[in-house]
Image 1 (spheres, helix red, strand yellow):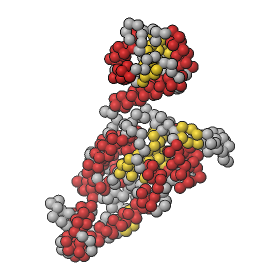
Image 2 (spheres, helix red, strand yellow):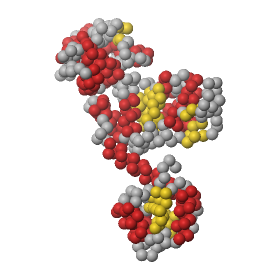
Image 3 (cartoon, rainbow, N blue to C red):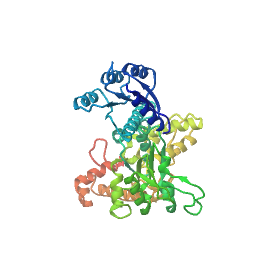
Length: 474
């Protein structure tokens, strides 16, 4: 045990008190003893205890009455009842009074040790939960960090729902949407908040080093392994392991990860001795893993194991309500960092922020605002943003150019962006040909009216009144 738990043994039989004191002293506990209920209550009031072993049949204040008093003093203190009489009514009375467990004499030593260990562990988890709850107001919420859009509110609700569990959570969203932020929020809201949060970027690990990085290795396991090394699973013991960009993990490593998750243990490279896995696992992907599994680039069984609970994180272009909030937040942070006092954004700068599609998501917005604060004096102007100065990869009349800028690192994202640009341009062209008539434009594009209506909303090609295409708003 890392710290010595404190155990109170209450029994009127000297032999039982002595036996249990010796047994748990060898197990690493600090033990105290009381001969009756009155002495036990005095110790509970005076000492900080982790668990009580309490006999029921005692002269004076019996065990059931003492249990009720103990629960009034400390309702979370686990009390394990001991008796030589296992009648059902007595068992029911003890459990109704709040007993943690019930053991009948003569009991087996492993049984009483196991019961005490479980009680101490749950006592510790309750204390951690209270500590986490006490820090809730101090820690910034997702709304304070991401915005107040409906999408962020839903993400926050999902985090609150899943955090207390030990579910494996899959976070899905494009690069730069804030998956790391959501993973940390889950960790901070869980009973493991006092433990470490260990993040691993699966896209940054060479294929040959995956197993060693995650599971550790023994000295001499391979060339260059001059000492034993702890893996990320062990480093995250008592806390959370966050595997980012899990889709980049090689198939052979995926098989070993699946085995580790199923068996709740890992083996360092160079040994077959398992090490118990003591951490919770969160994973993130910037692609649809179900599609990746269908095309054979990701294991289906691992996908099913990882997706116990899935939290989708929409790209910034789908939660435009958060853009100005984030811009102002990054402006204030950068002012503090640089010792400047840039007051805000001009009207045209605001318009430009809101109409840009942000292929690099929040990460790109942050970089844009930081650079703008550096360049600005009184307020951020449109030219400080630099969003029109990027060389386009593709350009279509009336469509936002696709650009390679900081944060837009994924080829897949660039292809998606290019396809969106082409689609937007085609819809614009059809609307112009149809004189703004959406039904006619739909027929020209050979799509149904419902589809073009939803596309107009996605690409913001509707008037504020919702009447349809208005070129001035495109």
